Amino acid sequence: MKKILILIMLLFLSGCDDTTTVDTEEPTTVEVDCETDPTQEKCIDLNKPYTQLQTGRDTIEVYEFYFNKRCYLYADGEKIEMNVVSNPVDNEHVGEYLVEYDYIYENETYTCQRMVFVIDIIAPSVSLNPGLDTVFINTEHTDEGVDTTDNYTEELTIETVSNVDTSIAGVYQITYTVTDSSGNSTVMTRVVTVVEE
Image (tube, rainbow, N blue to C red; front, side, top):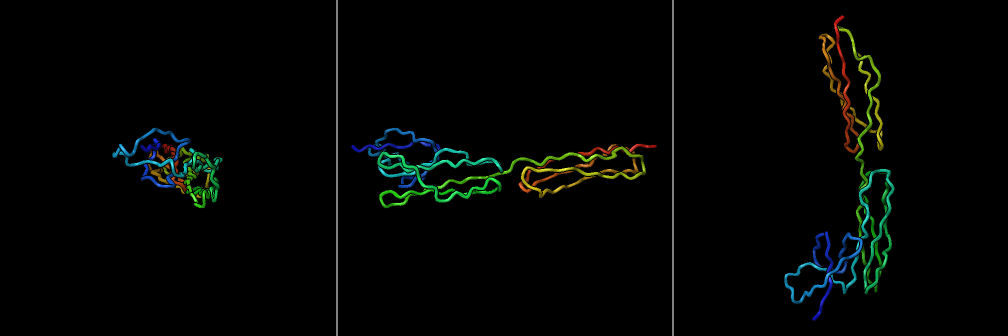
């Protein structure tokens, strides 16, 4: 009775084919008799070549070093490192990058793909510029704004909302919302006090 080994995987497999790709370091196998187990729907036929991505960090922060992990072809008991065909990952620019591998085995080309995401999740740094924020009633208040820096881009948007009314004594706020090109935001508030003479 013919027996095959199947992989126990975390990823959902769509079926048995020659080029199924899974993202685990090493295959974990159990012995299953597919002929006597009709409920067995998903498997990798280890009697045929198949590819497997090496586990790696595929989402990195912009400017973080990216180390390209491998993809292997398993065939006839051998573990073969596949060739990197394309590796366009640019860790200086936010984006999605497709790394491609291939290997020719017994006149058949096997392929493997890895998607790498370069992201920016760091919000801008914001500080208040020095200013005279306690003023007398019926005098002018000058909003000195904020100083901003960002880890990735100089394209920052600043939204300012103020309720300052120097004609009435009281405590007021100017709120600055600074947003970078990745949508990360920092909010800073300036307190303005209007006092009577």
